[in-house]
Each structure stands twice: as structure tokens, then as C-alpha cells.
Image 1 (cartoon, rainbow, N blue to C red):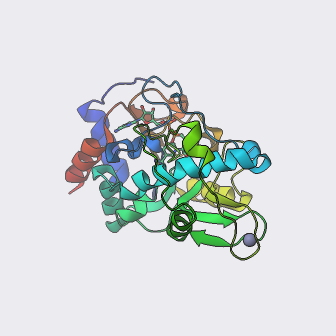
Image 2 (spheres, protein in one colour; image 1 turned 90 degrees about the vertical axis):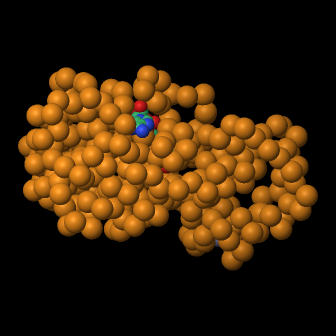
Length: 279
Ligand SMILES: NC(=O)c1ccc[n+]([C@@H]2O[C@H](COP(=O)([O-])OP(=O)(O)OC[C@H]3O[C@@H](n4cnc5c(N)ncnc54)[C@H](O)[C@@H]3O)[C@@H](O)[C@H]2O)c1
Ligand SMILES: [Zn+2]
């Protein structure tokens, strides 16, 4: 499999496949970097410094939860303030033109929807929701934000470093003085409604994505290293069903071997140009 910016011929082939419709899109962190949200691995394929929270650590340690919520109190604002970019807008436009059968995203930032896409399957959940681990009740992150502000009057912290998980790097002192809050209904532990490392995607959600994949005319991967099996398995499923897979990603991906074509290109400009070619 060649990995380059793509020949005119290959871009033409991709445009033809897109024009046939029934496209299922699988997006990853690379689609949101142009909105200022860092990805996990970047072009080198190596993980950045940020140590992601694991499910086990979160549920078993009150100190870890305090650290998470303190860091997220700052970092989440960065995600909320992020705006969709040309890549998200192009995906929404493809959907408006009736060419998209489904959008599966590994991102937790809500930017597909902010760009006007609908029916998006959020494989790893959303940072914009919060769930009680005891009673299952879901609330908005905005509502939690108001409660956290009220519980922490005068809490001041700042950070230059924003991590992909929507958290920020804080000092030990800043973390220790932060107060978390519990579920208003039952007093249970609150967790962002995202799938942490070490946690499984709900089986029904996985099945929904397999079903979408199997009906696809084309599986189009946008900005994912596919390092995580969670997304990679849909590439494997598509390939097993002889459904063409196209990958647009800067840097290699684990799915390159299964792909009919790959393009090493920046997503915003690339998808915008593809839309033009489809007119
Ligand atoms: N925005 C978010 O919601 C966000 C951000 C970081 C991580 N995550 C989570 O982390 C996991 C990471 O897996 P992943 O595969 O999505 O991300 P990843 O970081 O492993 O891979 C992203 C890929 O996109 C490429 N890329 C970056 N900017 C690009 C651009 N402008 N154009 C083309 N390619 C670009 C990178 O080189 C990299 O290969 C996911 O499970 C996801 O839930 C989410
Ligand atoms: Zn509860």
C-alpha cells in the first residue's frame, strides 16, 4: 500500500466512490486538530506525554477523581470553546447531499454535530455529558460546570498544557484545593460520559457500528491512527466483507494494509477540495 498525498487518479477514484453514496465515515482525533484539540499520537504514531485516565484508577481512587475533575474543570472549557473546522463542515455537507449512510466518531468533542451533522454515533461517548456511576442518571457538562464553580469559589488555576482528554496540567496544590461534587439525586460518583481506557464500549453501540459498516458502499477513515482496536475493528469488518476502505490521515495507520487507498494529507483542505470535485 502506497502512503503518499495521493495521485490525481487515486483522488478521482475516491471522488467516484463518494459520489456513489452509502459512505460510512469513521473519524478520529486527527479531524479535530485543526480546531485546536490535540490528538493522541500525531504523525509519528507515538503517544504524546499525556497519561490518559483509566477506568480502574477513576473508580477506585477519590484522589484520582479529584485530580481528573480539577484538570477537566479547566480543560473542558477549551473543548467547549473549540469550533468545527473545514473537515467537520465537509462531512456535514456530504451528509446534506445524501451521500452518507453513517458517521461513527471516536471523538468526544461534539464537533461533528456542531458542524450540522446528525445521527452521529459517538463510539467513545461525549465530554458534554456526565453520568452517575450509581444511578445512571445523565446530566449536561454545563450543569456540572455550574455546580463545580459554586463549590469552588475563588479557586484559581491556569494551565498552558491542554491534553486530548480535555484536561489540563495543574500543580499538586491546585488539585488538592479543588472540591468535587456528587450526583444530586443519589450522592453517587460522577464520571464524564466517555469511555476511558480499560473500559468497554457498550456492546449495543458496537453492534450498531458493525451493522452500519456492513451496509456501507465505502468506509472512509478520517484522522485516526487506528491504533485503538475500538475503531480498527470496523476497518477489519469492512475488509472482511470486501467493502472498500479509504483512509485520509497524516502519518501511517494500523489499517493501511486493509485499505484500498490511503492519502497522507491534511483533512480540512483535502475534504474541501473533494467536495468541490463532487459538484
Ligand atoms: N477530539 C477528540 O475528541 C479526541 C482527541 C484526542 C483523543 N481522543 C480519543 O483518543 C483515541 C485516539 O485515537 P485516534 O485514532 O482518534 O487518534 P490518534 O491520535 O491515535 O490518531 C490521530 C491521527 O490523525 C493524524 N492527524 C492529525 N491531524 C491531522 C490533520 N489535520 N489531517 C490529517 N491527519 C491528521 C495524526 O497524524 C494521527 O495519525 C480515540 O479513542 C478518541 O476517543 C479524542
Ligand atoms: Zn446518582
